[in-house]
Image (tube, rainbow, N blue to C red; front, top):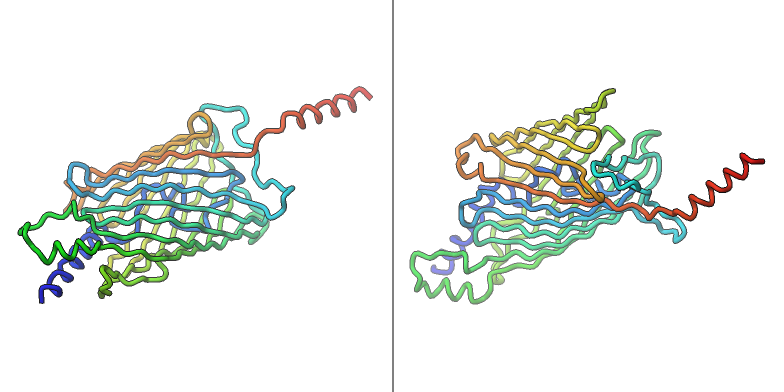
Length: 346
């Protein structure tokens, strides 16, 4: 009987933590800027390497609030040794530089990877994932991509974050002594359709739908599949400012459907400000800019207008990224310039 009660207690707290977050998988406000965070097919849309670190801190001021750290990267690659698929980028080292251009009308092989840590209260998950995507022309100015990600994660309960009503609960101490954790493999997949102005992506995570299994006890709970739909379209004006409306839908089993409506204004292709509204009564304010030496920085602040507005208003997200193109071949450029000069003299 004690074992059943303890198991129900553990699973109840797990369920509570997941309900509060409305989903089991991580959530980032900046996934609209970099859909690769949600979709393994969304890497390699540009001809540069993209490296990124993101930190999300929710409910600041409350002990045990959700904390997420993620490191991600993606790049095109070629099976031919003599072919370089990367392009030169920001060769003039401008302080406020234009972002990399989206490239289409060609086939691409893309490798990517993510490492992240996600924690709330006594529960935490550390995971690593690698991905491959293949992009092909869908039309003259539109590319389509398919991607698959495979990874491995560790889910555990941190005993140091558990407060007991009865500190002498012998059965709970025995339960924790057995190390309440689970190692599991998982997969995600996605499809994208994109060009310089349009992005449309559909993806799914936790596709293997693993059962929650702690101390060799298989529970009735599971790591539920999550499905994401991301749409954005850039309206390019003749002036310095472009507007990019966006729409995101998140579907998770046994949870309400979450939708985000928003837009961002982009100034001279190097700085932007945005506003998103989530159907769980949250406003998300975002700011970002491409800075010096190919670095870019994004910040998001979430303002809750629902029942949990006091706790939700302490949510901040910071993202630091880096674009890396191929090295500039100065000798080759000088040789070409010299050949052009010789032709002009002739």
